[in-house]
Amino acid sequence: MLVTTTYTVTGMTCTHCVQAVTSEITELPGVSSVRVDLASGAVTVTSEAPLAEDAVRAAVDEAGYELADA
Image 1 (tube, rainbow, N blue to C red):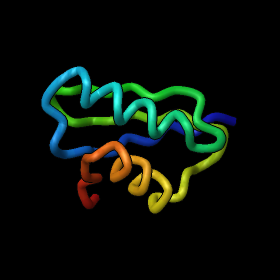
Image 2 (image 1 turned 90 degrees about the horizontal axis):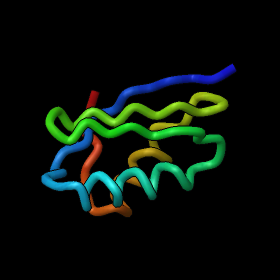
Image 3 (image 1 turned 60 degrees about the horizontal axis):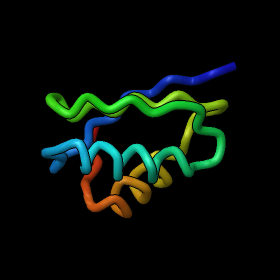
């Protein structure tokens, strides 16, 4: 069963930002797709199981951006 979760990432301003965030989150185990809406900062992640928010936050931090608190 696939799980889809949407996060908000702050600090993204261009397509390079989108690519960096997408690349880092895609490397997390179980992630099957990542869609980023640059205008809103919404990052929709589809995975095989729920992801630990700490893991997503670490991936976004690694890309140089910040996961907004829910």
